[in-house]
Structures are given as C-alpha cells and as structure tokens.
Image (cartoon, rainbow over the protein chains, first blue to last red):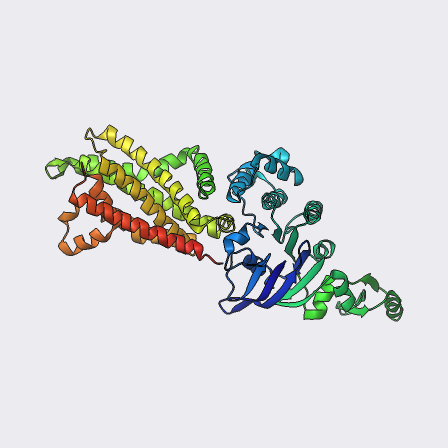
Length: 277
Length: 245
C-alpha cells in the first residue's frame, strides 16, 4: 500500500502540491495525470526521498518515507523524468553500479535479463551517450527493475519517445504489473493514462481534483462528445451520456460534426476548464 | 562497503578521462608553470634558511597540487552531477547511508589528488636532487587530499550553479594557494597576516610537507588538519542527509 496524507510543498511563493491525499493498493498501476507544473513530479520526488514535504506525510508499505528513508529506498525503483544515466559509462557499467548501490544479488544474470527485457542486450558495452533518447529511456527502465522493487515510480516514462518505442515501453510496464509490482506513473499523455492505468488521479495546480478508474472518470463527464468548429474557428463541444443522445444532438447541428468517445482530456477540461497540453 | 559503488563509478570515469591526454596536461600545467617561473627563474636568486629555494618550493607545489586537484575534481563533478546530469540523485535514492556517499566521493577525490601529486613529485625529483619525501610529507599529502575532497563535496552541494563553484575557487582556494606558505615561509609575513594564515588548512599542510620528522609544531599542524577534515566530513554528510529538491 502506498499512501499520501495531506502532502504539501511550496517553492518560494509557488504552491507545487497542496494537501494531496490518496492511497494505492498493492499491484495497482496508478497514474498521476496533469499538465506541466501540476505537481506530479514533486509528488514522485517526495515518495522517492528527493524532496522533503513542507507538511503531510507519505508511506510505502506502511513505512513513513521521511522517518525511514533508507528502508523505503530498498523497496522502490525510479525512472526519473531526466535521463540521468552516466553518459560516459557503458550500459553494463551503468547497470552494475546501480546493482551494487542496491545490493542486487547475482548481478551478471540480472543485468543480462534486464537488458533482454528492454531489447538492449546487443548494446551492452556501448557508452550511454551513444544511445538514442528512446534507448536511454529503456535503459533507465532496465536499471530501475534490477533490484526487483516492490514499487516502481515512473516520471513521464515515455516522454519524447516515438510511438513505436512508446508502445514497447508500455509493454514492459504491463509486464512489470503482471509480476505483481505496484506502479506509480506520471504522464500528460492521455492515451498512456487510459491504456496503462487501473486508476488515475487528475492533478491541477497542485491539487488532486479527481481520482477514479478511467472508465468511471469518463462516465462522470459523459461517454460521447459531439464537436464541430464554428464559423469563427472555435471548437464547440457537447457532452452526451449515451451514443443515441450524441447522434440526436449531431443531427440538429450543421455539417462537419464529429461524434467521438470522450477521453481523460475531456474529463480534465470539464473539471478545470483548461486543456492538459 | 556501501561507499564502494560510488568510488567505483568515479574510478571508471577517471580511467576514461586519463585516456584523454588533456587530463594529464591540465593536472600538471599549473604547478609546472610555477616551478619554472618561481623555481628556475626567480628561485636562482633566492635562498630560504640558507638552502636552495627549489628544495623549499617543490613540497609546497605538491601540497598545492593535491589541494587543487582533490577539491576541483570533486566540487565541479558533484555540482554538475547534481544540477545538470542528475546522476547524484541516483546515489541519494539508493538504500545506503549518507556517510557512504560522502566516503565514496571523498576517496575518489583523494585518488585524483594523489595522482596529480605523484606527477608533480616525479617532476620535482627530476628537477631537484633534494630528498623531500618523508613520513610527515606522506601523512600531510594523504590528509590534505582527504580534507580538500571533503571541502569539494561541501562546495558541490551548496553551489547553486556551476558558476558558483568557480566563485568559491576564486575567493577561497586560489588565495589559499598563495597565502599558505607555498611560495614563501609564513613567518616572513607581518604578525596580523601570519595569524590569519595559520587559520588556513593549507598552511599546516605546508608546514608538515617540509618536516624531516614529526616535532611539536608538526604534531600541532597534523592535529589542526585532522580537526578540519573531521569537521568538513561531518558537515558534508549533514548536507547529503538533508538534501532536498
């Protein structure tokens, strides 16, 4: 179980996180969705001991993160938003140092296995700075999985990746979930949140404005969206609860109308009045 | 041995740097310039305590070199790794004690400082026939590298940008190189300045590196260096323990 209890953190006058509370049961893939500056990374950094909150507490497996940071660090794996590999070390050396830091047993076999999982076994002895952005993200994921953490924190795991590599990352994350790990990820990609997450917490300006399964969140908004561009070039949307209702609304409107299923961005707009990107 | 992975990482990176000849050149160029200018140039017309100036200068240059290399390599690398490359965060998020991070960084800094010192010692042996490697010299060299690696960690942790690191170097490390008895004996300075110079750790290293054997003054200087080293180590560990972004 992972728990945040009234977490707050400010940077100067900016309130990055404001009284956020949630609980995540073991084995769940939990997503924090929101635009840049919503507080997603600050929450991840608090759970992974990089940031001390101004108030509130967080727990992993019942252990208070602030009170027992070393114990908590033994339970977690982290893929940060930045590619913080040692660029002048090889993929193998990066993984070896990380394994030693996390007291991983049978290092050689684990490294070979991790490189295999992310499809980098043929680049074992290449320097990290020769890797593309996508390869570096995959190596970061392999690194985080080495100690077989109970909880995996992924901060924007597929940021900057092309669609094909992004889908490969998602496959690895799904596999991680099958192995029974709890996964907490931040994203501002709607598709990523919908496809990967059991539940999604929507963050806006440091506050958790909604938390539920993607299906329930969309049902709350209305499952169908009827939209058209008006003569002034403005997007006009009508939210409908059922497909039938959507088609009735569409027939009453002019040409150029599209009917589509709602997504988490529609939920975000409904809750905050703003777009995610 | 929680510190070992941090030390190993630094050594792997150091090995790659060594393969680029630029590193060897940058480690040696400043002391060799001083040796040529002060030792062979000015030094021909100067004698200290009735002895050869070169024999006085070389141990001081070794002390200065050990300080510069231990301090600079640790402070700039740690600062860059913390602020720009974010690789320091990998250590902070590992299940190891803050003191282990400190020890790993400091031991690696010591190796870099000692490596540069050995190069200068080799040049010194070629340039001067005087024997300067004594027990106090070796002890001073080791503790000087340890002490300034600790100070390097502190600077790397408190600097808010890479430019800040250069500011600390310009205001503290460079003046210390000149006002700690590297180029001339401390007792030649006016009394007030002399007392200030005795506060600086490098002054005590310079006292020790020129001792043939430990005497009362040498023991006092060693004690001062140990006090500084312990204080810097504790403060550096405190900074790592309380690290928060």
